[in-house]
Length: 208
Image (tube, rainbow, N blue to C red):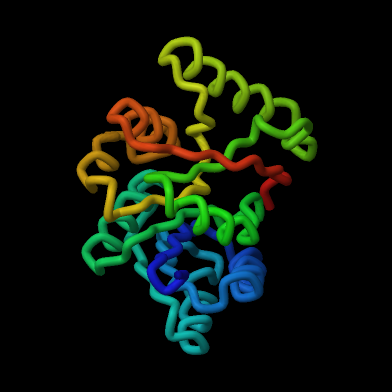
């Protein structure tokens, strides 16, 4: 089933992380297609990605001319996946916080859902490695969305999987933000449009 999945990984100066995340992906989902979207990294990230592509035909990349925002990178990747007729698209960060081992569970859950997202608030101490400031900002955003919009989804995370055969591409792109707000906005809009959304609990280490 992983042949029907495109894994999207935005990068920005992730030289030290790209090889690490690739090895984890290869261990858990060796046949999955990967699209790196890089926003003009200056640390050798692009050269590393090019080197990986030479070794693995399942890797593609798109290098953008400047930093255009993590949300816009996800939008580009999702639109690319739709154009190339992928049924499923998975998105994740490259900074070490998202563990590819969860992808197989997402693949199982997406069969009966439209969207699968990860939730950092279903496990106790899931953010134990984070500094106090980042914990406060993340939890405050979660509770504000809950109180003001009535959504208990942990929608601000970028580790998720879409079924593009069920979700209309325009419904995902309804979120106009091109940065981090894209995540909670898109999750909230899809929830309100009646799409079936599943969540899985994860622990998130501090980003590298």
